[in-house]
Length: 451
Image 1 (cartoon, rainbow, N blue to C red):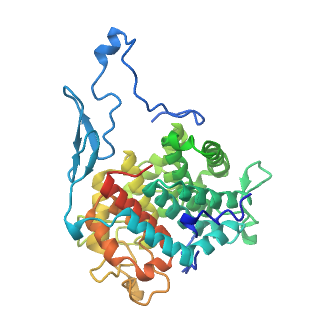
Image 2: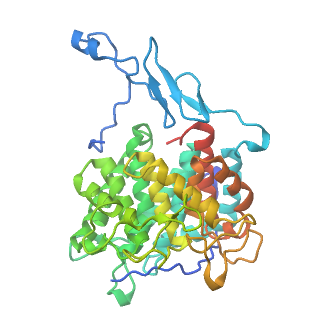
Image 3: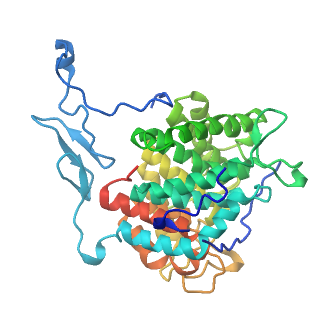
């Protein structure tokens, strides 16, 4: 439908040359809301209230202090804000910070994003979206989706949203109905022309997060044709992604590696937040801390303190192996970290204590003072040595991209991103890293995303 949709308005003219290192893909084989009805976020008039209503009313009714604050009862409502923020009317804003301690502004990240997109990512992201996906292209397209959605949430500029819809639309053109009635993307001949659950879940985890953000923001869906797009993507997510792979066997969701299973935990979490359906919550909980059919462990059981830095987490990529074996690689771990961060913000099982431990893993164990970083989450790198510092020789580093979400709530992480994560790291889907950094800045400076 929109094969050439990415020749965007002047604000965002897009490009790329991504350097793919052939990331391993060891693939073996809130209550429900009416999707079409905007959620009522308006205040109610006291006129016509019954005495019972008046007796149970609160000065905090309808008051939203944002994600870093809560309403306090009194003669008039007020906001109590988290450390580092203060009340400004009925919202929480970041405390002032002097000079270089202030995070880089969203507008500065936007300038960097635009330059990187024009230089590299537009061309490559477009190519990935207009491929059939048979050679794993949609897997790598996920980085483009994440970067664009992050920029939209950081800036509130719908031009980014239109771009991401264009990329997704291109891929949907190649989804064809199979004999089982589900739409699917082509895959390699060695898999019978069928795609893999890993490839689809890795891509769609970022799409379904976009769907959930649209669900949470009915004022966005009221613009343009976004309501229809939301409904179509939600229907595809439920039937042609979730139901399709679920119907083909639970092993397609409860995968053999931690990072592979985490994609389905994230998809389940987001679909549950939209629909309230128990089937999605069950998979999220089983993978996070419950019993996974056919697997001896879960994500919680995988975690143990780093031997030299007990404040940090270490874990294995294989289920149930002894501590110290099969340590998770830094690159694939990023998908787990970004899932956990979304879950913490949603208040779904994972907590700020987990965030703190992951931040320690990043800052105290993996990421070294010279800007280089370890290849495994325990701080080791094997015979290859760590990924080099940004100015070192690195064809395509960028293996911390999704770890960068930890900068949403930590100025020290964001400061290190600003000074130590450019150069070669941006040669691998740099607009994803810059988009995440821009969204971090929005959190730090405004207390939360635009959407």
